[in-house]
Length: 547
Image 1 (cartoon, rainbow, N blue to C red):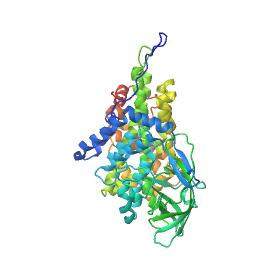
Image 2 (cartoon, rainbow, N blue to C red):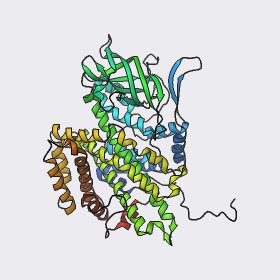
Image 3 (cartoon, rainbow, N blue to C red):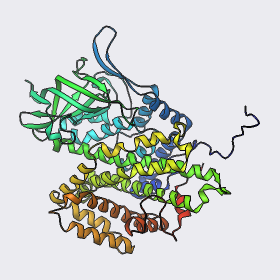
Image 4 (cartoon, rainbow, N blue to C red):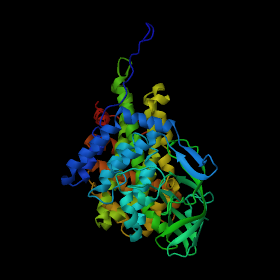
């Protein structure tokens, strides 16, 4: 009931009951571009079904509930027995169940699997990001396990299953499993070669007992984990199940859950191994090389996750301003607000186009294209560096577009903002990514050539892009003293790649605005400083969700 002095007007309706996939033109066009025509019909149907669920009021409630009811650690049962279990809100399980049943842990075994899975991950992550952690690690564990054909034959069907079963039971008794990962230790952080967890060989071939501490281990209720430990032959990768084949619990002592800025629905933990049974994956002393395939795949998911946060933030900002009147008309039509929205939309579309191009490269590399594999080696860390760093300023500016409405929890924008720095930290923060790009430039034959061929496909189409390519080549000419300027170089490489992809595939108004600002230098230091004369209305309209 409303009183005579309290009539609600000029408030935007909730952005709900829409198809998150179909409403995203940059994403739908990328799927059409990168998938074989014979796969498009089925892929569109699956992604739109997921998109409608993602845009539903029910799924949005799940996201809020999972965030508002963080996991709870139970180290012991009522009798004092050590159980090391984590309780999650039912919404967490619903989110995970939908992700698994939608194929978000199954990219490796189906045609166009990486493009289809990446699009789905980008769509579903807009509902809630925390549960994406076990989804990502389960998907990414496959290439590491494939270094041991016997392990892959045993575990891959479980990893790629579309059945989600919660609870700790022997993996063979479950129709589908989830994987986690434990590399980080207190004394080393990203320097995983400083790990001190010890692995002592047991009598049976390939079996070890682990003793040590992992400082960050996400999703500790997963069925198994890939971890790094020091074996007699050096740093080695191991598979650690939570429950052994005979039904007994493996030694996996959860010491505490992290109290985090964002990603609150996900249980990030510290765990202790003390004689914990493990199976070696790959050769002794080659742990980093074995697990790097998993790391690369999760880094791409960091790009996708940031693209999802940007897309949802921009969609909310455009929706709000389209329904909000100020100073005599719709806020979206005001020239300065239009400049801000267009600037944000450019960043979002560039992130989406780049992420989906990398997903397509994964499909091509799986089919045997070594040039695409070399391209991934260089561009995944470059994209991870740049796209994840752009996420927080985009989300913060989008929140500001909603004004005070965006600062309250009910808008959902604070949850997006708290989540926004995460992907820049996970799987190696900015310096780690920049240094990895330098390693790829120096040590991966064909990586730079593959990158230059990719950006060269757009050469001659925009003079600002051509100038940026020339400047980047000048930077690349001197790799001897490059470490101090590695961030500058990697930023430039990512921007040039984004610009080249937009010039080839985006509408002219999008490519023109991106090249003028990001590559041509006609841009300020904040969003909303695009130069005069661009078709900003078209850029904003392209980003708008039609409900």
